[in-house]
Image (cartoon, rainbow, N blue to C red; front, top):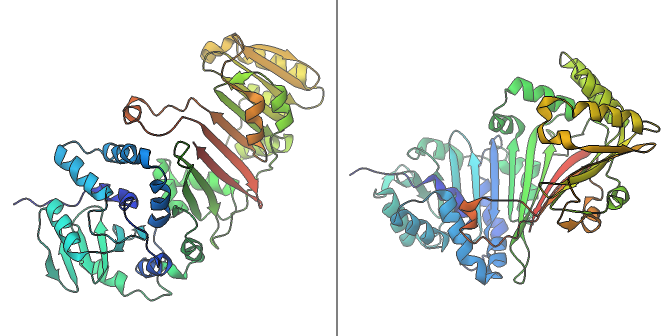
Length: 437
């Protein structure tokens, strides 16, 4: 009989126990799991199932939508696959409530604790189409192994018990527990926490390591890790949302110093833009920032095109734009007395063939501001109500036209399409925030 590995979709087991009760010793359980993760793992992620479960339980009407979203996003095609994944999401795999850990060593693993060994074995054997057998200190079937109450699921290939043996023999100083970020994860104050080595993150971008390392070295001092924290938000009376925070950490797991000059959006200036929009964007661009970027471009072997360089040199302040996808309006803050110069440069730039529909942009200038528009006044949300959300940000984008596409719309996902992205200068570093609700 042909054997199958448990599908890689087990990664979504962060939601496995949405219907289960909470565990009281999650922190101690997490310590035991992180003890088997090497300190130099390329990626380590922790899902706090207790917190996720509690929040989902408050949203009774969304449970079916969430399960449908996960099952369909995973790509389950047959009725059998859909049923097996639904079983998984309903906590029918015999896995203990608490935490799940994902990590990348020589292979990629998900590890957690077993609540009901009989149920767990039956679940794994059904979907791997293989029977558990004794292999050294472990019981194995397909890509899954367990010893005592801990299990490991390898995301591809048959389970490597030799590697598991070495992982279970890690001392505290060899395990992830010795890292400073482990202490943060053990607080369990986020639904999902994840940290990746910066080099591992670079590989996911598809860009060359040399190119990305040069760019990162110009932006951050000692960029060593990418850290993310994810939380479900909202309550039973509001659609389910989420918040994602991200930052670059140095080799000591502290925020890496951001090397470019920063400034923040002038919220009052954005409010004065007035009008409406379904998408509103703002960015703070100081003369110091432009000067540093120009020098960086030269150091990378060349420089910016003359026309673009001339435009950038006039900027010094907040730029903002609101649009409904057809019409738009906005303003650009220039240096003192540079408004007319910037207007002339922009008008020349929009005459170029590649600019497309934006050749219809109209400009008007004052002493240090250039206003622009295209079409009639945009429809949508009032800018004055959105602008306060841009406070303290260097860059911000708000939209209520965030489109998942028909694929997700058909699943009746409890999401009304409001998204806010912010880049925040903080503690000498730069942090990323994504809020969806």
